[in-house]
Image 1 (spheres, rainbow, N blue to C red):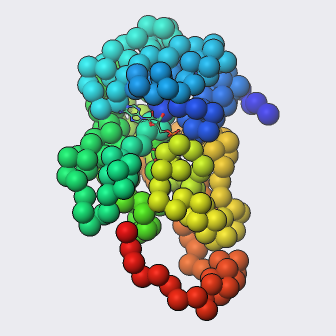
Image 2: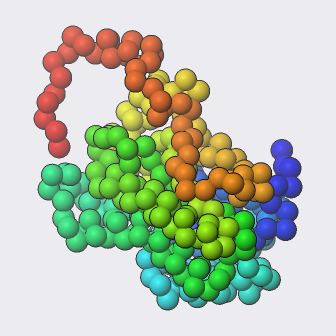
Amino acid sequence: MAYNLLKGKRGIIFGALNENSIAWKVAERAHDEGAIFTLTNVPFAIRLGDTQTLADKCNTVVIPADASNIDDLEALIIKSMELLGGKIDFILHSIGMSPNVRKGRHYSDLDYDFLAKTLDVSAVSFHKVLQVARKLDAINEWGSVLALSYVAAQRTFYGYNDMADAKSLLESIARSFGYIYGMERKVRINTISQSPTPTTAGNGIKMFGNLLDFSERMSPLGNATADECADYCIVMFSDLTKKVTMQNLFHDGGFSSMGMSFSAMEQYNKGCDEEPDHKFD
Ligand SMILES: NC(=O)c1ccc[n+]([C@@H]2O[C@H](COP(=O)([O-])OP(=O)(O)OC[C@H]3O[C@@H](n4cnc5c(N)ncnc54)[C@H](O)[C@@H]3O)[C@@H](O)[C@H]2O)c1
């Protein structure tokens, strides 16, 4: 059901790779809610993914940009303002990538060039987007900028690897830049900490199926889906949340406030007779 919550608003959406992507669902919902926006992704992902199909559906264009490259970001933001006919009201940063996760490096044996890439693409790129947008004065007053995070920023989750460090930095950038952009131009900046979600990035995490099941059992409302995350993003882009800024907003069915649930305890008890394998890899 649509409520015209984003009627008249212009946006830029990063990170729609295929129909499972959280950004894909946000783009569909934003389109339904009356927004106009551009889509963007790295050229490699545009070639391999389905971003153009989404653009056709949403009556828009895809502008290639590596979110860690300042020149690309400048070109993207300038082109988006030209095409959309004015300054931007919302931006979704839905980007994550870790070469250490991809190559199966253990957290105690990280490749530091890979770590630098993880942090640059998954976190510093958020700062770059904000810095470029601010220098171009590209965001309207009461504009809303969101990035997607995960609870591994606060707690340790086996297998999440250096993405946990990236998410901590990402959330910190939202607070630090949120102060500056809020004071100067009333732009709000938040992160949404989403449940594990079966997407290309999600499935790359070690034992992701087990994480999904554990999280489902621990959350009183169950895991939040990508569609539900899109609903939350729309509300955060709308004028209904004008005074929310510098927050990390949990969208996880209650998971982050839980210690142990009945369902998870029951499942744990079933496996208690077996000798646990203490070998971490
Ligand atoms: N899937 C989950 O379980 C989960 C949970 C919480 C948070 N998140 C976060 O949600 C966001 C979106 O991920 P997703 O789950 O939809 O997976 P996804 O794989 O569909 O999206 C990740 C996107 O990042 C893009 N990307 C990678 N490097 C880039 C670069 N240099 N410049 C621009 N774009 C680049 C990819 O092309 C892809 O479109 C990520 O920040 C992810 O960490 C995911």
